[in-house]
Length: 250
Image (cartoon, rainbow, N blue to C red):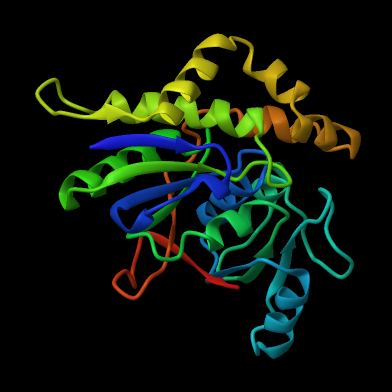
């Protein structure tokens, strides 16, 4: 088993043999993990505001429009991209259409992967276990894909990816062979170097922007480890009934 990290979606290659875990810790993978834990009836992700509005207009269920551009909900949207806000919301049974600046685009690039999960600090233990179990059962590698920020490296995603790599490695028995790619080794180095995770997020580009728009409490909220056991999972043709699934329209 090879465990590796792509620091931006543009680095991703040959995903047909990889279990992929998308990391957009500030904030889409964190927000979507919280949304999934609220047991909505349906969750659709899309890459553009126009597509989100079109899906909503064609639906008979009057879905909630959720997501952001530049950190804030677009005009006419019901919710933004705040995991702390979703944690307080009643979403049970609701139909949700979600779009974001970075996270949904990263997910859309992985549609041909055998499995695509969403990972963050909030569900770290659960997503590490699920990715590891599926990779072992089907003889696949594991790739953590950082959404990045505006198609560039993001230190917050890299730090979270390093933490998730450490959680996956901790599940490997001493007699099982595995290797770490350069990206995985680098992410572990980043995770090991920074001891003040709160400060790291506050100083990251995404973290500074979240603070500037008045949502700094999100940073404290999303750093909670193992708060949620749910692992959002892309629905594919051979995976119609995941624990909690989402679909993507591009």
